[in-house]
Image (cartoon, rainbow, N blue to C red; front, top):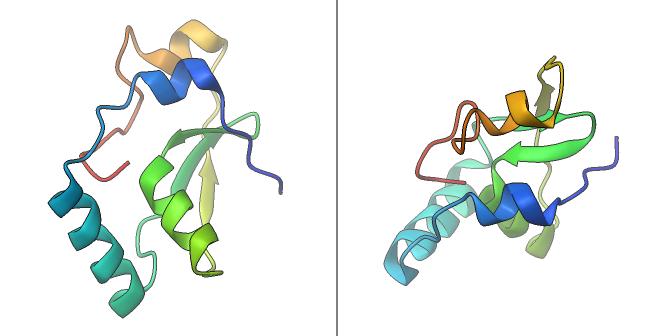
Length: 87
């Protein structure tokens, strides 16, 4: 499956601090991408940073699709469903 980055959803994600991103990258390089990326209709909702790191290092990552009725539901009122600090 091809993963698409949507600018609207990407803007909803708070950027990680450099040390947070570095720690996430270190963890993924050591342990792999443990949490699946969350997609809706092929659009990445959760896991933007994990996806970037995996692509940069040619690492595999799993995805899980969510069934939502529309874009508004996908934003969850400004919060991406299932969003965590490690996007």
